[in-house]
Length: 87
Image (cartoon, rainbow, N blue to C red; front, side):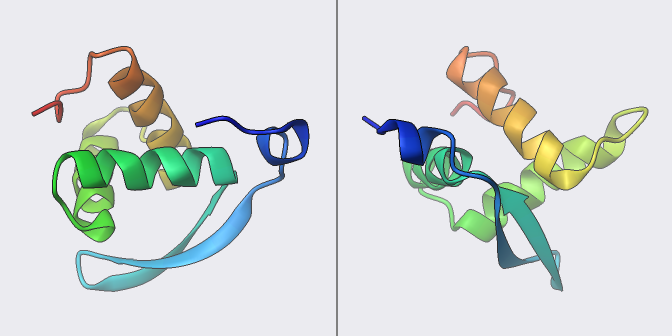
């Protein structure tokens, strides 16, 4: 993924997603959104299913971070090869 400066430093974009049967919104920078979609594709999961898994892990943490923060942290951990979801 080769991003120019404008794309790399693009501010968060709010997107709607359904997890666990509930509609919610997530504000993520396009870079993180693309990484999230790639992680879901790699695991052959719908994006909503991967976010639901991350949400379960997030809720179990003390203190639980916000969903967007949890996604960013999960992605960084996954890129480092340390994700519990690495299949």
